[in-house]
Length: 314
Image 1 (cartoon, helix red, strand yellow):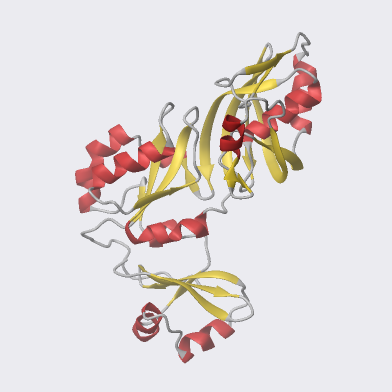
Image 2 (tube, rainbow, N blue to C red; image 1 turned 45 degrees about the horizontal axis):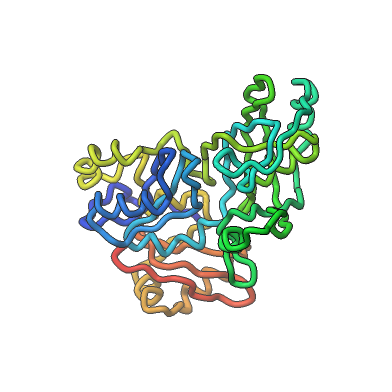
């Protein structure tokens, strides 16, 4: 299905693809998008997977026609390195919040390590009240900020999954760990519930995102580095921190189209020849359709073939 095109060294005028940005602590994800718009001189910029100001690490930013890919990349799993300390709870479940409780209880390194490694797999955990999650159309942090009498900072429960958990270090009552988690999981929920289970309380002090699906922080640049690199980006796409749609979607289900099939799909039509080609695939889900290295459209193969997106000059 994933036939290799003859030419992947495409030249282009307007940027269209994915930037891997190393967000620094203290700035919001929106700050990064705003700065990137100025760097590439294009307003068509978005991102997937918001990072809080306290956190740093990988932020995947979409530019040009690739902003249409946002909904399809959102479901990727993520890998984090996080540091937390025992002994207190805050309203935000991280070190920046208002302290609600302190705990005198301490635990040994052996007990803490065992508790960490045991707290894995599928979990039903409360969402932090200080989050952008909406309940009945209202963001939880608006509810938290608007109710001064609020004592319970636990939002509604949500299924979350954590795996490949590694303990990096334990120093006293502070631990650093790494794990993968599913779409929509809250790292602060994991920390808060671990502290609650141990009876010590716990808050996040540092958070770094290392991976989003196939994309790694190892290939990302800070905005300062990107400003220096931009002339090179304009001349060549062979950069690890900038991926064209063809490069970015390797690992997803891809189908190569001929010129006739591609032309009709860009008009929102699925040719009989393409329907016949699809009927021979043993696949259901989103299918990314290319003509050579050019992303033409996204089809959904369920009970019937549906055109989800079409792309122009990609």
